[in-house]
Length: 310
Image (cartoon, rainbow, N blue to C red; front, side, top):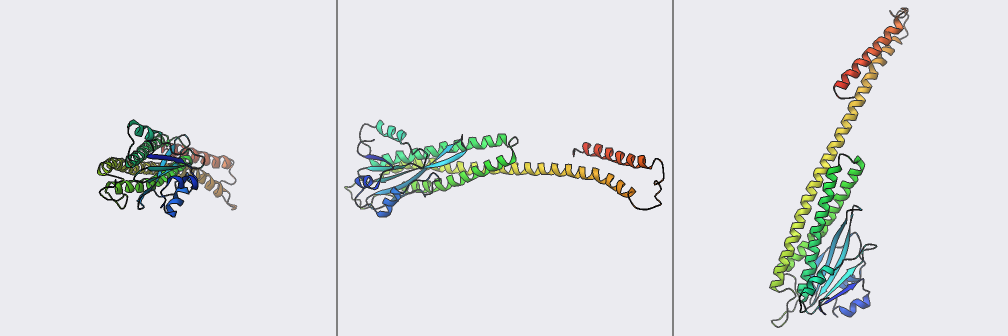
């Protein structure tokens, strides 16, 4: 902890929250802080001014490459002139957000850091984790590209579908996070009722530091779009591969049908119920028909093999 300026709470109840939150906390803000977290990340990240305090709702996407899935950690904070209260929530059976890195950054400074600086370090850590997440997803797409020709079509299709869903959800989480940080950079989020003798939550130097965080989130957003383009290219290649495989199957079926068609015609021809068929009373008529069947079959097999259809 950075002195008394930072109070970190994990899955607090209402009584514990009210002990540290401002007395004028709005009921809707309190409900947001008490709402259980979801591993699917169902909230929209935001940073809003609520009079004498700032309320932030943030999500961190965490990739599990071994399990091929992504879950979301929620970390909210309430910032006042004197302190910042973080509320970390456990997303079901998944681990909650770990603020150890932020705590170590804050402890490097000997004196007590202002709440705005602590908020900057917290949001910057979230941005860094999004950049790490993009690296993990890029590795997943690289693995998919390497095995698209070896994996079964159904496995490839499912993996592409899961990655596409994850990318869409990450973008829906990342974009509002970036926009919320932009509002701080533009000076649109701060404590109300400031006077020349009161301290801003985000002074100019803190806003400039948030600008670096905004740049990281912007890079992450661009990387998400690039990853979607790569995934779309893999999907197009996989669909083309499936079409080629289906075409090969159709070629083989066509060749087999053609090979069977000529003998069927010969058998049908000699199976007509007429008395005066020239070969009917011929002693070699049976072998004559078999000769045409074998000759036509061998010819077609050789022909279709040379064309690569068999």
